[in-house]
Amino acid sequence: MAIDLHRYANPKRFLAITAAIYPWSVWLTAILLLSGLYLSLFVAPPDYQQGDTVRIMFVHVPAAWMALMIYTMMAISSAVGLIWKHPVADLSAKAAAPIGACFTFLALVTGSLWGQPMWGTFWVWDARLTSMLILLFLYLGYMAIWESFDDPAKAAKAAAILALVGVINIPIIRFSVDWWNTLHQPASVATMAGPKIHSSILIPLLVMGLAYTAFFVMVLIIRVKAEILKRRLRVLQIAELRES
Amino acid sequence: MKRFFSLIGRDLTLAVRQGSAVTLGLSFFVIVIILFPLGVGPELAVLARIGPGVLWVAALLACLLTLDRMFQADYEDGSLDLLMIGPLPLEILVLAKVIAHWLTSVLPLIVIAPILALSLNLPGEGISALVVSLLIGTPTLSLIGSVGAALTMAMRRGGVLLSLLVLPLYIPVLIFGVAAVEAAVAQLSVTPHLLLLGGVSLGALVVGPLAAAAALRLSLS
Image 1: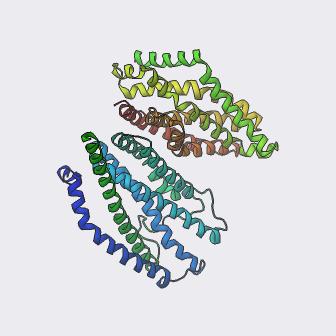
Image 2 (image 1 turned 120 degrees about the vertical axis):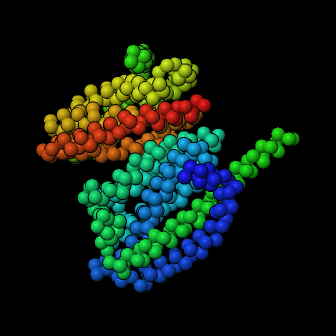
Image 3 (image 1 turned 180 degrees about the vertical axis):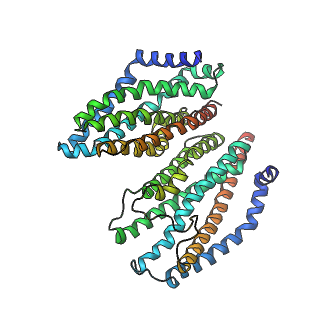
């Protein structure tokens, strides 16, 4: 395992592998997103109580999944970066943070748009909503600490420490709806007893979840590549300054 | 062990001789709480309702106010370098700093909190629950805060970043602390909330010094 990790830590090899994955992720995103949107907006039945408003859920739930998943991924790659000093791991955590922040924001906005007709209010200080808002601020703090160091190696370490301390909040967010019985409904897909919702809704939801994941992989590859190239540019610029 | 206590003693002596750190935090705490009756209006029922939350939020902010100096003063005059070369492990050093910070900046707030709670018309059961919940919960504030303080120590304007980093992590403490006081006011059992607070504090006791020590090594490398 460790040997494998070292193989992928080489930025050059990383770029070669991601260049092979990238076209697949683009096509996968396009196909899954289109079919997922079609399934969720046209095929899935409207809810007998909520009507068509229920379709917001197909955008909302996968975004919330992604928000949690991306933070977990960031924490794992931060740990890898901290322990094995892999530059690509740090860069991928850095590149993932804004994407995760966007998904968190999307989940909050779609949730509040759904909450207005359903709960009669855009925002409630409910456990799940509040903890998602905390997650957004964790992302923002993580991004801010990257900006506030001049030395990228120091910034990477500081950000990794922060990400690992912040990961304690992830299980709190994940289980907040089960621990505090507040307005947000409890988990209904990933429960111990299996999914509790009908397949006509479950399948579009899962397709949308996969589409978001493919989209995340696609954007992440672009962003990590840009970060690696930025590092290289910096090295080249410094070398050029030394020569002159 | 002797070194550990002498480090705490040194920080306490410094705080007492300077004086300003203790009184500044304390006056900030009092002023923030005075602002609320002025802003919300003097109705006693309203004040009693928002009292627990106001007191906890004010304690949280007052703690944040003094946090950025936890390592910065020692960093600026170079004594932190000496302490790091010394025989005391860095994690224990952080713990000593955290205890000194809690004793000088947070304990005075807890001492004065009952008086302020009375002025906010909090019932008697609520006041005792407030003091106990503050005693159990606030060590977490200093412990988590030490991580943020260590990360932002070498920055020029670290204070703003410090609040962005630390405040999201304070929220669980705030929720359980206020819940304990409100349960006491409603004549319900306080114990579950206090146990949760204690659990959070113990978890922070493990994570805080480790993470802060790593951040200190990074800032000084």
